[in-house]
Length: 173
Ligand code: IMP
Ligand code: MG
Figure (cartoon, helix red, strand yellow):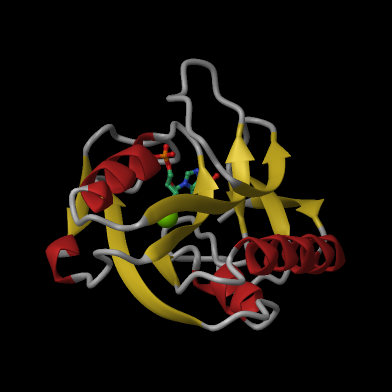
């Protein structure tokens, strides 16, 4: 139990950026019916703040994407749970994710969702980690670029801990 947390992004900075993202999303979806598809569990805190700042009507749903293992880096095998039940055919969908790291999770998810026939499909991620050899991912609504370090807080965990922290912290063990 010698985890070290160092602040990376304060709650105040997150609040400001979330408001900007919400404004951008609202401006882009004035005429279109919008679905926010929130990726469990890490994106729930971000999504809860984001949705309260969006000024156009929308519906929400949830999807679970898990990569096997409890390590600090992606294991390479991503499983999307039960996506076929999602009712997104013909809808304008924004996938709300906490962090894009290797890009594997979001790419796998986007490929699975495309098969369900959404009218449009975009990605909103609070964080984009810069990792050598990562899959190129098109993040239309991006909060912050961060260095290649493991982060927790604002919904993000290490072994289910630290999700409650109001800001984003770098974690070293
Ligand atoms: P990717 O598939 O490598 O892009 O990883 C994306 C998923 O891994 C995210 O949805 C998170 O659940 C998790 N993840 C990646 N990096 C971090 C991190 O620094 N802290 C917490 N979770 C992370
Ligand atoms: Mg996640």
